[in-house]
Image (cartoon, rainbow, N blue to C red; front, top):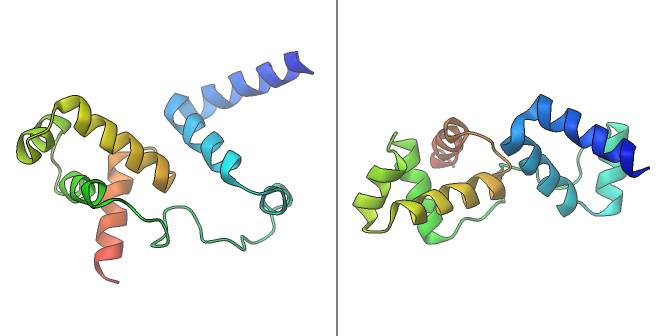
Length: 117
């Protein structure tokens, strides 16, 4: 079975890209058995969808997300918040993971959508 698992993982990584695959895998690991079965069967989600307002970011992550939404690069975010560029990158990665996103554009859209709430 391990060989089949490796083939499926390789095919999924090729289709989704490494970041997309990793985000999808983390979302799947976070599901309980009922949610995973419902997802596999195509049933409507009973939990709050990923990327919804139910996801909570830390104060710093929210600051970083706001700056991402303004179109700033990691270098610009680091300068603005007086943190290292690597720390800014780490915050962006955590935000992407928490929200189940794979791009900065999705963060910007999420910020815009949640600003209306």
